[in-house]
Length: 110
Picture: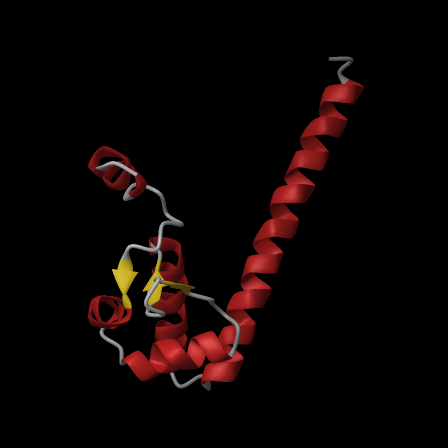
């Protein structure tokens, strides 16, 4: 991979660009918090060749939502479950919208 390829990947929400320390700092959380949401299977960070956890921007957004819920007093396991359910609901709504659109296209004869 060239340097240009690496820079291009930084725009990728799924590219694991952040170390655990940097991710924790960005979230205002501890590294233990990141480990705990990983243990709860909310996010699964990729590992560097040396075995260090690496987080993507997408994972940091999920972790930030978990942090928000925990800061409001929600136990971490419950916060993780809430986020998983929110994600499932969003996906179901997206699929329903696609089906409604397809059905309206068929009804219009398109």
